[in-house]
Length: 251
Image (cartoon, rainbow, N blue to C red; front, side):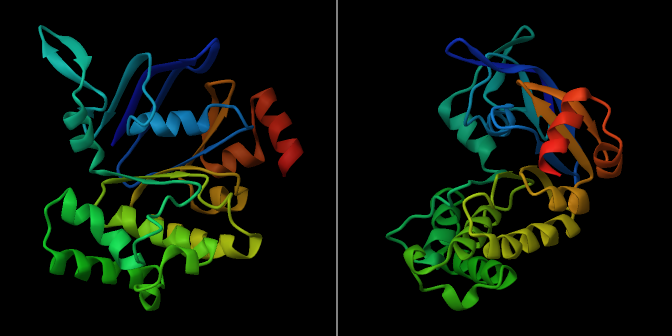
């Protein structure tokens, strides 16, 4: 589903990503963890070209993201339209919800399917209502985001991403902006997605979620992947000294 090949990214004089290689299989849940500044969010954002890599390649479903074949085996930067088209199959859930404040919950979810996918209002509405029921918020369809709790807003954001029928879901610390009592309701929705075999790449500090739901945990530090494996291996018997040091501070 996802292939990241020798991806590097520099911001100013800082090397944010250094020759990162990572693959994610269809139906797999991969959780990225590591200290702040490790490059986790940058790596996540490169998958749908919210951040542009300086070198390397990223493919989703066998298609290059941000680049295209230009002939004679050469690769060139993709057009804005080409990038937008490939993004349609990649759902992204942000840390701070990013809902349209002037729209109702239902309108937030219907907007992109109507404008981008060309669906009828009736079809988009039916899908939005089904998704709201799935995340336990059908009764909030007419509410504005400002009238929802943080946890409810994040569940709406997940429903909005799912309305585009993505093959891949990316989550950037989806619970870090929430009050502690609201974290569980968002993680429950993500657990259900994992049970339904949604392919997911998740940046999170919720180690309990990583232990329980991840098929693979990937540890990053200083822009590189330093260790990866199934949760039992990584949490119970970490090998890299930096992983051991990181876990000693948070577990």
